[in-house]
Length: 403
View 1 (cartoon, rainbow, N blue to C red):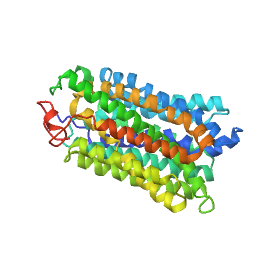
View 2 (cartoon, rainbow, N blue to C red):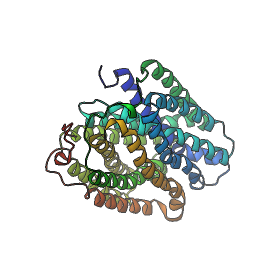
View 3 (spheres, rainbow, N blue to C red):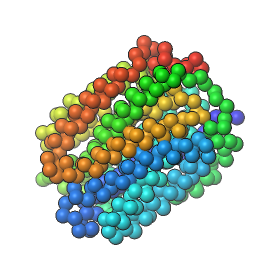
View 4 (cartoon, rainbow, N blue to C red):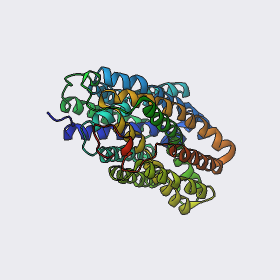
């Protein structure tokens, strides 16, 4: 029997990635109307109340990954689909900032399930893991795009509560479909036979440390941009475009461009040395962020497309390296450890975003992001040197397929 998920299960797992990222960013896309209804004078003052979602998104990855390996990934994905729907409905029912913060935190805790569970489930047995990860990244960032355009339209015509409630019903429907499409697992991943050799412990520890630190800085950029882009666009397009639905559509187009970049990167991962490709994409981020500091209007928009292509294009690498070097029997646990550190620390970006912009403006934020990109580049250069595709000379003896 094939180890690969069926086409229907693969489709639902990719939809799950879209749901994961869309739901986490509905708040950022609707923060202005939410702040006005809850009595906040400025959106920046409400933004820190959403930090709990991103903190639990990181912290929850550790137990989620452990349960995925030891209890079963199918069960955890059912918890994900139904839990995301119920948590989003809970957010829609809140009446105060404290209730909103608590409900968003619950949403973040459930959202933590996807990355350490869904991605290992998707890539198991894949002959071209880079391409599979690229398609999955495309799906996740389509979710980011949907958070901008769908939220903008729903908020305009129905209200911000419906922007949570309507997608919640979609997630629950996906859970029902997944329960029918995904067959029960014969045994949990941790109980299966190991199918590949591993790197020596010191080499594996080195790679894990590098990708974890790179994930922290990369996730900081992801959180700064995806949570701040809506307000950056609104500020720099003042007097040019001010309709929230149209601004949401413009921002969605930015994210679609970034999502397509992930698909291209995923394809290249199967053909190009990982370190070279990773460093080249991260290096592109620095000049784009720096140029955006003073840009206005359509010039800012063009630069936003450019830096989001570079930010999204860097995302697939950490998952690809874990797939390359870690056996499936423990892949969820290793991913969970990496995500807990990276997403937990990077949740600080959501906490400081509003106060930083309020005190110093988006120019300072963009300067900080350019500096963070430089740090990421330095970290990536610490990856083991490779003369072949996918760090071949460092690869385990089993499964020599390039990454």
